[in-house]
Length: 97
Image (cartoon, rainbow, N blue to C red; front, top):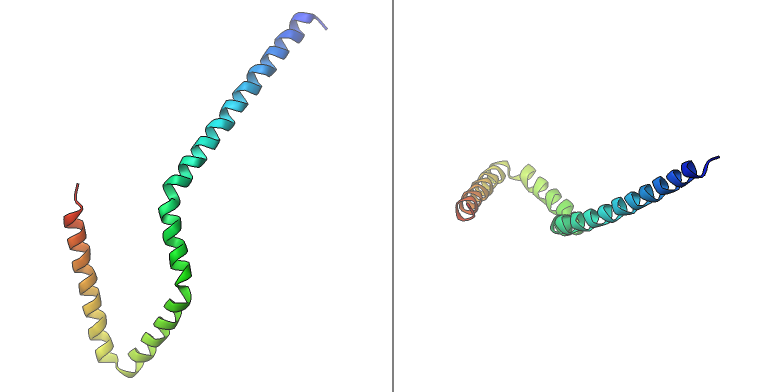
């Protein structure tokens, strides 16, 4: 084996190792940035999961009420949907950029 070929392979190996190290640092930086971006969504999801038993109980009670009083349940559900629509309209109007 000649020395120049060995030296070139050694230099190429060092270059590749430096490139791999830079890529690892870049991936680490991107992962930290990703975690910062999704943190609010993750907190919201954890809050939803914490209220899961209460939602299950509340939906069961609403179902029972709806079976016993279907007209009142329909009327209340329409009111709730209307209120949510108004809230959405107000929020979109206030937070336009």
